[in-house]
Length: 423
Ligand code: UD1
Image (cartoon, rainbow, N blue to C red):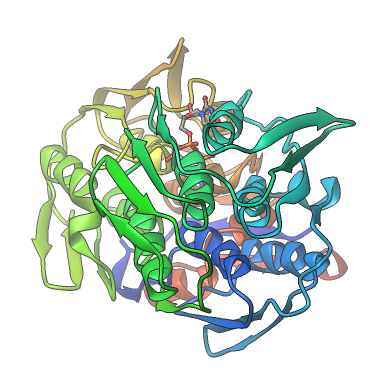
């Protein structure tokens, strides 16, 4: 397994990086192709492990997938094996997104239950209750969800008791082909959902309420292959901007949508950084600033994203004083704390709230990444730790950051990948 070797940066990060397409948007859009017979196209697709995993899921179903230059073509004409196996779903929960489109178009499918995750239980009850509200019969057997329906799904109303990105994706996909009108109340409003709505509309779906918590879908009998562009990855952008703050440097992220990270930019401003916002770029300047601790709570969009909780924690650990982070989305998403402590950070966890006693000097150590965003947090801390930090299990990081080492190099940091055969 590859590792990262991170020496402390001799000088603060300084430079500009281009942000890739949003992994989580592509993961929602790829299964949308299953709703039509033919070749769908998606552009601005990042080269990431998760895209390969979703391609493998679609290939097992019978699709042909090819791509180049960040474009993906999904040919669904051979889709006839209506199953997503445990081996793939367990490695990536978003594989579960094929459930909605498969039952909507083919009237039956069998998809493995995703299983647990490093941050505690991650239920899929809302995906299943929502599909039942659209007339699907759900049967769980031998670790698999079997979904069936007589004829087409039937339009229905489903109220999400809590905001769920994944369940909104699954239901939206399913409702496009249901008979009659479906209303999704308290739907997620993350930018990736808007991106999916736009893509579905390109396929002929009838959806009203884009960007709001009430989505009204008039089901159609069939859809045509889709074409559309992926939005920029707001979490990747936020991670590199954390890099500016933790090293007291200056980073400009480009090819992105500033509006998508307003909650994050407000945090950087509150800490005391200069934030400059352009039409498709943002610059955060933390040079020669006296930064101060803060309290942050993760919330559904437009609140501060849970996916930036770990990188922000690493960042706040560099600021003198006590900061607080409460994660209201995933109460157990704190496996990075133990590893940040190995580098010398002082962090106490009480329930879902971490108190970060910032300003302690860090020392390089061998640490282990426990998930995608935890990996990024460890790299960021490694940049300011004295001596070398070695991070193992960076396959987690490869799931979500394209050309990570190259982008870090553009900002002036040397993050080296050590391959086992070279180690
Ligand atoms: C998506 C993102 C993930 C992000 C998360 C929250 C993708 C591929 N992943 O994950 O990066 O951290 O949104 O922004 O886009 N819940 C239930 N029952 C369900 C579904 C969810 O109780 O059936 C709960 C979850 O446990 C969590 C909350 O709802 O507490 C939000 O989860 P959800 O938005 O569904 O997260 P994912 O879609 O899995």
